[in-house]
Length: 472
Image (cartoon, rainbow, N blue to C red; front, side, top):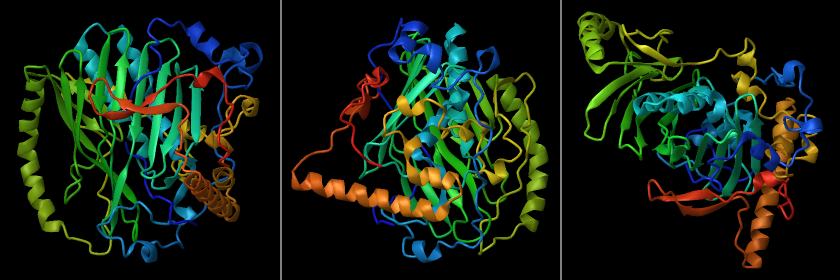
């Protein structure tokens, strides 16, 4: 394995295609360049009632990680950024980081709802719920995705959820992944570029998201931007792995000036705040209009600020007594960061409105890398795809495919071969004094934040895939 391998877990954006405002569903399908009569839904044959069925499990269950230790690798890295640390393939999951990004789209229905909402605060509630749901798939997902190779791509078209997405690995050092998603009906554009920075702190790995996510609601002529919270994986050396999200997320509506401030709370010494998210929506004059609360692993609710404050005061009286008892019983564990006991329900304030609830995972998820139903089908190579997809699509990566089939020796060998091939190609470009040229994205300026971003240049779904790099 190579020293060029980066260790990172998914954490968390960007500019749109040629304006898709006013485009019909038919025009989007025409742009795909697919014969809908024979290759509908990425080449597979539709099931009864025209709804395609996706696979519900992986070809083989995951292997046990019980006998694998990373201490010999990480003990010299405390406090450092994990940018060039070689990690055993056993700590991966059989998905590329580009596919992991695609999991942001699992709850696309939340965006689709906004088209029928006339009130901007209602739309902000839906966008906030979508922002929280985008990190929900990370719950119990302690395996790291494969680092995308430079030039690697991924696409997904889900007609049942009314979206398509394309992503590209646009930089290797630093590792940057760019993505662009859009509604098949032309209702929204969702885009971003992601550069996660990670550090090892002895017993945990902290991932700080770099990059901005942008959502454009075309019907309402609104644009929202935000960044994802920090992510921490505990007990990478000893004990049971567990994940928490923490930090402040600010969602800005650049058209109205409204803002939603969400606080992903750290679990705290006694775990009382584990998974909790609390925040509020304010207008441009900073008047609080709504409170949003819940858990990023479970559900999100919204309620009037006055009702929320009254409920919190009544709760606090009972909590003070309970906290004193907890302090007497609590003790620090020097060997592992014990995961606090999870409270499976959110205390719902009377008068609240449910914004989002997480979907149940399949019963066999624990032996399938804790994948959701959505994640389970991301690496599925359906009939007819070979003739449609570019050969840079990560469904064709042999190391990921071997791991998915639980052939770990082959997966490790293929991963090393691909990394060596990538290094050789980089050296060859250096000899020729050539710069790497991205295919579907270019560096530009986000028109809403003014910061540098990777901009989708369009044309991917024209299916003209000539002169693509040979990366596999």
